[in-house]
Figure (tube, rainbow, N blue to C red):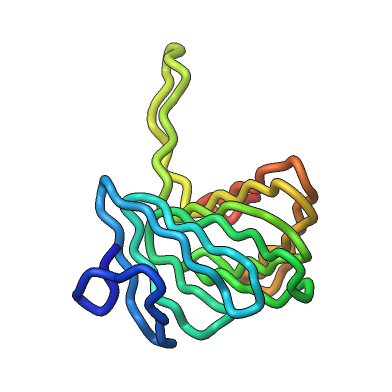
Length: 146
């Protein structure tokens, strides 16, 4: 993982405003100050805004909010803002989904995909709030449908 143009070291503190980038072979785990955990997938570009907010430009992050206060971690994307509600969830921005191979099938670019493992999340965008409970996936498409 690269932060601020250099390689990150184990145990290194990441300051607010720090850009984070992983390549096609690297992943990273960041321990949050309240004990939660943020996992950063391959090919991800993000910026740590503050101790409770990450801006995800591209790629994927997985949050285990642990014992933190519900709603205390936020993932901002170009397609909306995702807030945890005491949960574990994955957010992917700029996802390319491949078709199942049927006739007329084609790849589909999905601006935002959120998979909720435990608890719930809410997606805030364009004056509306959509919620997703555990065991579901919320997909926000470019045309505004969810």
